[in-house]
Length: 263
Image 1 (spheres, rainbow, N blue to C red):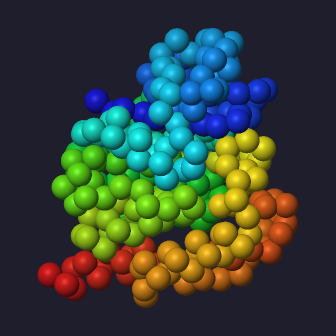
Image 2 (cartoon, rainbow, N blue to C red; image 1 turned 90 degrees about the vertical axis):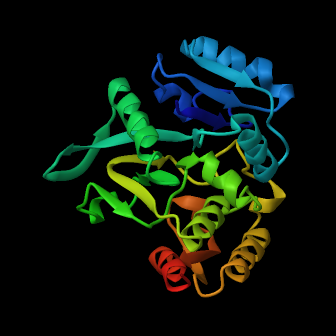
Image 3 (cartoon, rainbow, N blue to C red; image 1 turned 45 degrees about the vertical axis):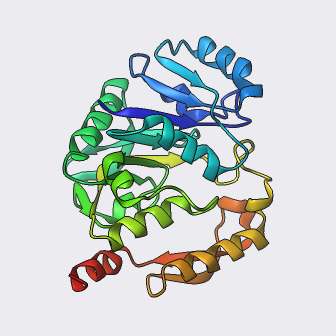
């Protein structure tokens, strides 16, 4: 059975924790929060009516320790990590690549598919909304996997893999698995989207999200994966308030191919 975890911090007011407002009432999940925010988040899920969502007070200061606490709690089998600020989308038809909001039943079907696919693949993802229309296929092998990620913990435990970064942590984990020869599957039939990067709450305003820290993180990721990560300067209209920042280009397929060449 797929264990689903939604880590959240500072988003218990209003509709900032957008994932919870879209969450199916009958789909079990763990909401991972810091102990001091437990009562506030309990009030939120009671207000929404999410009787199958359970509060877990294993949230810590920083993305890396929080996610590693989640891995320890899940222990083995299949799990999914879901960002707290997402909406869930689906293609309107097999011939139309524009998206619409998913129904609760479709969200449940999506997670059922993730669980099933984890029997074959060590890591599974749902495509980002941005760029979804540039891919015609139902699913793609060996590509970016962020914000909604399914993991086979038996593989991670076997390889001794956990999270080691507070930024671009999904990039690092994906590249490590690909380089070890574990392909991933990312579904484009479904999509997930954020309202805005660095929206209030979460890790917005944290030292590790300052521009200098993001630059250092990008450079460190490139050091960890030489030949598979390139550091670039980037400016986006909607995200990061339009500020220029350092980003990375990752060569996912090249990373997986390298594992085949080493055999």
